[in-house]
Image (cartoon, rainbow, N blue to C red):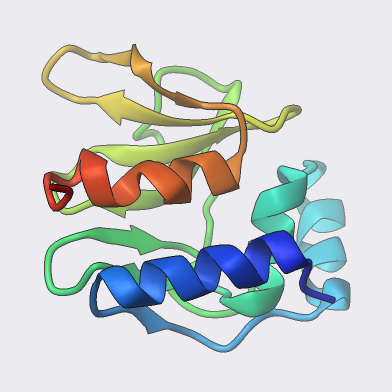
Length: 141
């Protein structure tokens, strides 16, 4: 079930630009994905996956998110991260990966140029990340 917070967020971002979201995953698919890989995805990212199991924000050059049942799928062994404490769950048009913590709620962007996660590119949860996308991509006023 999708929370009121997520419904409000979806309405907001759909007014900001063109999106290409895939069909949501089921709770069972998400649970099986986590169990088969021995991980726990962030709570708000799992809720997002119920709405959209992958897809793109701000087409044509925004952010591509990965899913658990649709391709491209999350690969927990993806080496495009600073260390094993992170999972790549998407990628910016710049090529910088979007990360989640393996055992936490925070979402981060791994800056390839600097080979680090910048302090101002760490978000307390997936919704905070999505709320900031419009401005982060230079589309804000």
